[in-house]
Image (tube, rainbow over all chains, first blue to last red):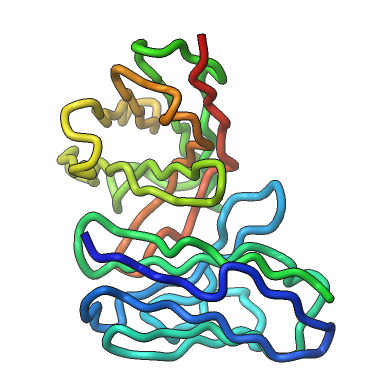
Length: 107
Length: 116
């Protein structure tokens, strides 16, 4: 299985700040990477697919980048509603695998 | 609008089988892929398997022969059965629609606790 290592595991940031979450794949996944946001008590929501494509309805302050084995999710101008757990997931090889999650809190 | 809803027992005894139903509205399960994903306490997420638009299945090898995913196209539902459960199968179980971009639609999730 492809291992997805996500960092940091938790993150505390202020309103208006820019935050970055990293995801490292154990092998090249050729940009077949998705990012999800899971708000407390809710199901995960797809934010980004193919590493850098914004899903419909997702605010433009979210962006994704990367290639090969290294990927990142950036949130510009952090808002209170961004408090969530964020997951990366590779869709290149079966079984699909997820990162361990990053818990984003407000400082 | 595509909507998915899980249903089933919230408590299962060790060694018994876990059975869940995912009811889909707004989209036919004879298109795309329909899967089960679970989230363990502590946030670890695991893809369990899927049933495709044609009825073919694919399972996570970690679940070996314990898992079965089936469907009823007349009711637009698909099902999860996980046999010989242990306390390590305690998790929130989600059904989701999968595609090459990932999982764009999810159910609200159902907590299943394995305990005697």
